[in-house]
Amino acid sequence: MHASTEAFVSIAYAPGSNSTLGQVAAERRVIGNMFDGSNATLLSLGLGGSISFLIAPTENTIIGSTVFELTNLGSGHKERARLFLGNDLGDWVEIGTLLNQEFGSQVINLNPLVASLEVVAFGPATGFGLTVLEGSFNSLRLVDASPTTGRNLDGFDIATLSITSLSRPVAIPEPAAALLLSVGLLGLAMGARARARA
Image (cartoon, rainbow, N blue to C red; front, side, top):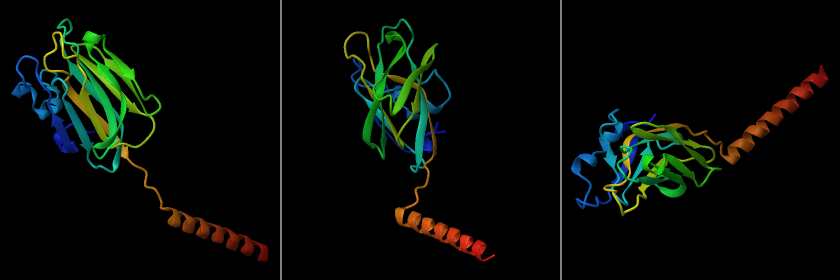
């Protein structure tokens, strides 16, 4: 489980803007806010901002993730984020979009053969779940896609985030696999010859 700053090789945060202050307030730009176990603190992406995570160890593959977005229902702040999977903070594949309570707490699945998105919880914070179905990824990225007009201030707010991963299966290089097959066939042949003599 990746749910602390130490669980990542890299967290690349590029805050966007706040529509009234010009920049996201300093207390909403603290990366640790996502990992303190509280929905009272949060990290704001800012309008047009982004954050990318590279898990540790990088040899693992992401199998799922949970993100909680914190916006008070009735606030009028329509916030959404695009979610991507990739490797080594590149080769991004867009999975879909997370829309907060003001959008009706919903998801848009864009790549259902690779991964699925779903709303997993309602309440003060809207929870979103990611399940990887195909492929191997060690990076996750969220990009704010909130409307820049209306009552929106500083985009998608992440109250908590966690990522789950597993060790990738170790592939045997082809020459080694061929050698193992040859040894196995030789063993079978020798066993058959010994049985024939007996």
